[in-house]
Length: 198
Image (cartoon, rainbow, N blue to C red; front, side, top):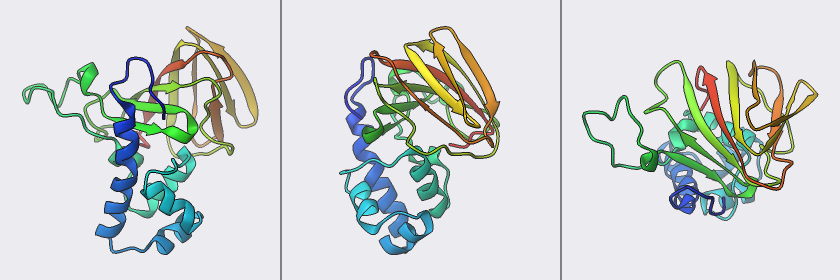
């Protein structure tokens, strides 16, 4: 993802994703071909992802994570800086863990200390025209969100809704869904997932 307002160098999160995928794959002694086959990606695309030349869609990252035996949250870049006494309860704004999806034009910031509990909470930022990818995806759980600024178009089970700042939403994650920013300014959403599928 490109630089976004109020994010401390999202390019660091973007650059970290590929090596994390490669390191996890190598740790499991899996070849590029094995993981690509499990995910349904070409070896070339997976190689580009690992080298930081391409960013997977959320659906692709979901498949990569599953093939590597982790959830998407495993790839969130950790920013050290919270006090030890508060690290399991408080997340300071400059220390949020992030995933940047450069090719999608979005960044997710983890708003909870970890994804070990029953609730995941994210700050999702979408540049104008950014989307979760061309294909709807589904997973276990429920989702809800509040659009803080901008415009968000969300599709759930083929039904399309356009939300504006202050609007909120909720749906079962098992329903095929996707979303995008159809506006000309950044969209910022606080997004809750239970259980955290990230």
